[in-house]
Amino acid sequence: MTAQTLLEALRAAVAFEPAAERVGNLTLGRGTLDGGEVHVALVENFIASGSLGAAEDERLAAMFERTARDCAPLVLYIDSAGARVSEGLRALGGFRTLYRAGLAAALSGAPIAAVLGRNCYGGASMLAHLARERLFGPDTQLAMSGPAVIAASSGVDALDAAFRAMAQATFAQASRAKAAPANAAWKIGDDVAAWLRKALARGDDAASLRERHAKLRERFDAAAPEPPWKAARRPELERIYTSHEARQCDGVIEGHGERDGVREAFAGCVDNLPVSSARAWRFADIVWQHVDKPPARLQVYLDSASHAARLDEEKRILSEYIVDMAAALAALERRGTQVGLTITGRAGGGVYVALAAPARRVAAVHGMARIEVLPGMAVAAILGESRDDTPSFSDYRTAGVAEDELRLGIVPPSP
Image (cartoon, rainbow, N blue to C red):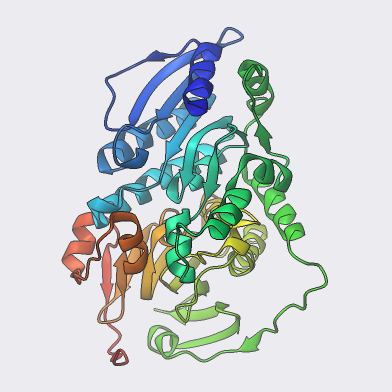
């Protein structure tokens, strides 16, 4: 009941008053701190592990929009397993819209603080990292992938005692507080109001988010050799651009090309490699460098089914690296660059959301793109069943995960 105790302490600290009836797992309201009004959004574990479906996404997006408009403090309470996988593409499209609004709120300079309940997985962990600071309860677990998904990805029994012990040590309050100074550990009796005053002292903007990016590099082994960049020629780029120059490093590409008489920059995560913390940081670094001298257009290319669901990645707090990609793109778009996303292969989950949320339009390459909430193995680990349906482009457009279909005349390889 520690999570409930922390929630009650939060409610008391801000004198929380609901503004409307609860929708699914979400309750929106307001409170006061030192005489000033604060927006409050509570995501609790009432149904489906506290997951966020399309209805919750819509309401929470509206709260983020008010926060950005008013530049008012926002307190998030999150006890959630992330997007509601059972809703399929509809949940993914809803979360894309939600996260775009969340990025705008973070970049507006509005102070955002996150108080975390028992679970904070996947998209929920991405929401938590929109906040400048996070307060972890004694039993909080935060990760891009929950233990069941990591076990399935690693071929390990999720009930294995050794695996459970390692997962607990990786996800738990103590390790998260040690990994990042913005993560604070709460214990029963601590003053939540005092923590909120500090956490809401100032908001985030592009400059502070870029500072976060620089600090994320410090979590890598400084002695590890950097993989080399090499010149790249890719068939999809040959079809898209009349001329282009590209280079590639460990599943990340960058370059410039000319399309319709206009020169544009591009970057991407390709070759269907899971997005690790290193790949995410490398991609974000390319985009942050563009923020200094914004191009008119930046096209992002994506062929990666998901993030790297591994415990060694979670030790670095992979969620922060995924959010760093989104923050860089949102900051660039805020500087006037037209950001687009083209899906050339597999896409889904938090990686899709991070790259699609800041994009004005998403294009799916005909015959090659496959957009999923999560890879089939991860869905089976969460729902206990696999889903093998193949969506059409009409399904993508209806769900809000893609606006355009791009026909390049490339025949995809046989499975």
